[in-house]
Picture 1: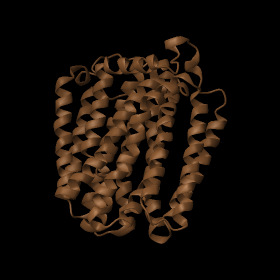
Picture 2 (picture 1 turned 60 degrees about the horizontal axis):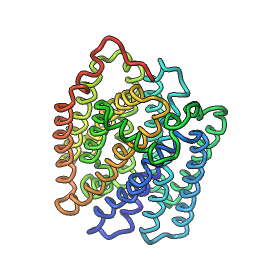
Picture 3 (picture 1 turned 90 degrees about the vertical axis):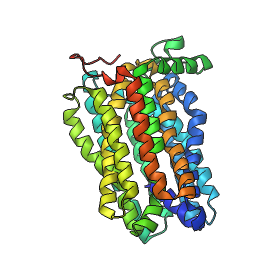
Picture 4 (picture 1 turned 45 degrees about the vertical axis):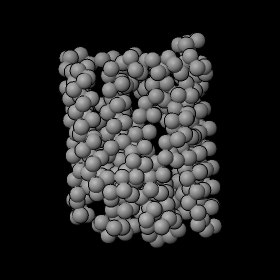
Length: 391
């Protein structure tokens, strides 16, 4: 809800001739802290109790959302406070994400990890469908500040769930020294060395980065909703939710099918190619439902890709290194879309939103083909009759 609200709010506070650039700067405000804290946050997730770390970060993000709600409801007319609060919140999220993702494998038996990742994706996508759609309705009927207020309240449920997870979050702390992942520069270097010496992990991260960098069209959705499709705030909410709707359907299929799918590497590459093609269709469409279906297809393709990317990384990474791996990966899978939003805004400001989206889809296709061609380990992944075991 807040992601959709921030973009819409910014689009209302700046002149029309600066909207594309202003929307792109939202991505820059989010990616800066990610690039700054990604390595140290990954080390923190390996050196500290992951559950406790999440309680701290979730509380901090709740406070920031509440501040943004209060400022907006009192009549915010400048855009810079939105950028500042968005950036600080992204800093907290940079520490939250490695701890959260690294915690998942310790909550379920190893054999159930593929299904756990798929179920986790379903939970995320249900929220991603309902959130923007409800946010669009709220924006259309009341002050956008109420969206921020609801977001602040939502963190209380997360904190309550974490408090209920007694005894979790510390299984990776059994070792000592480098095996434990102390808060040192050497521990961070170990994480980088591990990631870039693994062709499978490295290639999945590159796929993630280039696909989202070139095909990050979300930042331009307010322009398409207002100027191309003329559907207003309600239509914008549905368009923002369309990728999540497609992702939800794909997740439901993946829960039952993920264990049976062979040639997982090839399926991963194919899903990213579909993502790029659907982005091109979105860019050229002038019909609401065609645009909606194209965006839904991007969500479905990205979900298939995400499940296999996450599965490969979790299976190929030992528990004491998992936080650092996710910290490095955060630069790719969060930095890609945020930098992509800035790139999309700059190109849209120069050549128009349609050229920005279509060229991004083409860039996604080209880079995906290149990564698949130079990484035979990825193409062959899953061809063996025996599945890899979680370290």
